Amino acid sequence: MFDPCNDIQPGTVAKMGYDPGYKDNSDFRGGSYTFMSCGFHSEMYSLGISSGNITTTEQETQQKRDSPTKVVTPITVDGRAGWIARDPSRTQICTLAFSTSYGEVMLDRFQREKAQKSGLDVCDGIEGTAQIIASILPPGA
Image (cartoon, rainbow, N blue to C red; front, top):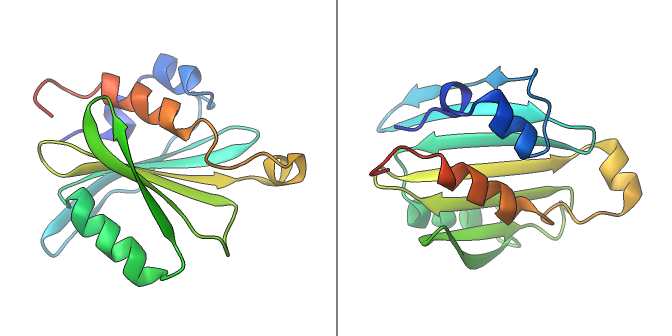
């Protein structure tokens, strides 16, 4: 399984627009699901990247159940099925997930104060970040 904290190298973190000197490891193993997670920061955003053995369909269902007002839009990332989720009541958060052979990779991006004041849309550019992640996944993932 892809491990964001160990498999994303500093050059890739910088290419995504985040501080290569900051990583926050927050793996979770419980029940039937395992998530390998890592957090990154920039002046504008905080980004959490999780890799887990949950499918994008299961995660989409959970997203809609947790927040019925959430709007989930299908997308494709590097030829992989995925989606972007936005909650109109929480405009500072954007979630994107795409499928892998073992489950999914999910990106949760949060606007920091500077981005909120700038009026930037939190989802702008997240698909490009996902493309970078998809390009470094191990063969067969």
